[in-house]
Amino acid sequence: MRTVQMTLEENLINEVDKVVKLLKTTRSAFTRRALQSAIDNIHEKAMEQKQIEGYRKKPVKADEFGSWESEQVWVD
Image (tube, rainbow, N blue to C red; front, side, top):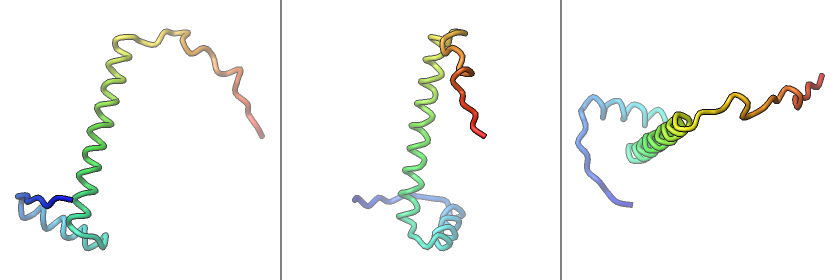
């Protein structure tokens, strides 16, 4: 692991300190999780955008998936 130095607003640090105390963790652990979550979110949004672009380029045809109604099984 590497040590990095960051500049943050005082009010953000105060909020982080409240949260880490509540979660019984450290600033570093909280920050690692928050950064990873943000990165995961960005990757997910990028994949969603690729999927949207794919469907724009090649839209689903009306009969592409057929009818699933005949395959549904309703159990009482």
